[in-house]
Amino acid sequence: MCLLSKLHQALGFYLEYFSLTSVCLRFIHLRLNITKTKLKPMTALFKEGTHREGGTEIIRSNILAVRTLAEMLKSSLGPRGMDKMLISGESDVTVTNDGVTIVKEMDVQHPAAKIIVEAAKAQDTQVGDGTTSAVVLSGFLAEQAEKLLDQKIHPVTIIDGYKKALELSLDLGKKFALKVDPNDRKILTQIAYTSLSSKFFSSSSAMNRIINISIDAVLSIAEKAGDQYVIDTSNIKFVKKKGESAEETELVKGFVLDKEVAHEGMPRRVEKAKIAIIDFALEVEKPEISAKMSFTDPEQIREALEEQTKYVKSLVDSIEKLGAKVIIGQKGMDDIALYFLAKKGIMGIKNVSRSDIEKLAKATGARIISSMKDATPEDLGYAEVVEEKKIGNSKAIFIEGAKDAKAVTVLVRGSSEIVMDEVERSFQDSINAIKNVLNYPYIVGGGGAYEVELAMRLREEAKKVGGKEQLAIESFADALEEIATTLAGTAGMDEIETMVQLRNLHAKGHKFAGVDVEKGRIEEDMTKINVIDPLVVKESVLKSSVEAVTALLKIDDYIAAAPMKQSPQQQQPYG
Image 1 (cartoon, rainbow, N blue to C red):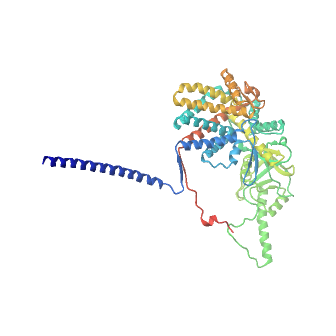
Image 2 (cartoon, rainbow, N blue to C red):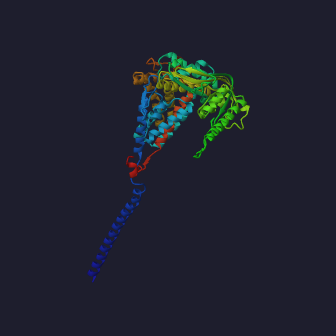
Image 3 (cartoon, rainbow, N blue to C red):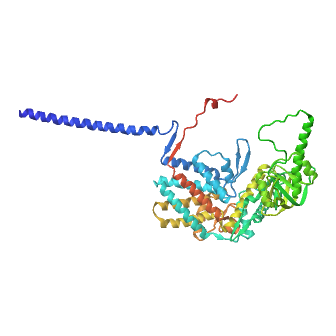
């Protein structure tokens, strides 16, 4: 009995053990199934064909895109920078080393690279210069960030370090910058010269011509408001006329319209001109809806034409009663209107763009007339002279001595469209450089001097920060020095030796020691050889670059939607 009891007890123990084991196995199996079930909805979260990447690999992919873009523009940096030939889909050719033109013309597809392109455009909008530097510095910052990632430093730490470095840079840069007198024409000339140093000109006289015209143009439209200047560069108009050389480019203290007098019988020159500016057509208005006129008698046709003539003549009579001697219209003028205007000795100019109409109204003090019913003599503008002049093989209308002289025109000359386009871009750079100094009268040495001095001071400040952020700030300083290294490379100098010498000079207190790219040597003070940059441009480059790179470092997931499927009708070519 005792033996049977023990056998029963042992059997119960084994049954309980196997039962428990079975339950455990079933539980584990259930957990695995639950895990699998949880994962299944993730695969169905996006549409079929959606592509997703995540983690540090996507950060590295973005960094590679930025570095590739920067590498393309790096050779265009500085006075010895190379030009790029850009060919559009319509076979239009653009030859330039202007950073913003290059990035605008390139059809960049990578999302990360597009962020850098937008940063470059923002740089151009804000200060009108430094776009190449912004893209190149973004590439160097991205490269240094990748090295920090290799050291297992978290992207957030890198971002914090870069932002701290930017904050320190803006503070330190102002401390060693030079304050200048914005009314000193010599300073403005030096600033404009530096901005044009990377441009190609057939002669130094062409560059001097552009610099002097740029200064005169900016000073003509500048208005003093307290300690600041109000400068609206849209008041500087560019008109390009093919022929002659860039040295023949001239500044007109007034407005130039790339138009001709509308009728041969009209006067070619009007002095003390009262000007009517209209935005309606001097002709019988056509109905907006489709309409037909049916005639049963030739007499009816004659009567209809007479009515049209009377209507147009009444418009011209109204213009004459106002006292206008020049009429400038946004829209067309028919032959009848032109005949009556010529008969009354009124100069007519038609089909002028809306933007020019608005600028003309502002310059001459006119109000744009939309209907002759409510027009008064007070709506007329005034100019001392309105004259048609021949320029090369074409003609243009010169409007000079207007009421508001805060409008000027640069008449750009050149042997080809490509040359004239590059001359206009050169004007834009020099005008913006002059504007920046007038509004923010601080300058620093060019040729990489600012970046090397800033890098040295940042390394000293980084020691006070400590931790992993210190590494990020030091990497920021390394990226800044790459600007000077790149300039040395474009001049054919030894990059490593150049950087060693520059560091030694800056350590000895030569804060504006930099690379004289033109002569291929190191200069102890770049300001003495007139190589200077506006501080506001340098600060803007730093801000744009840091904002763009930190934005990319924060991206750790990449989700690309499936491409749109074309319908069979879209896939088949039209026959």
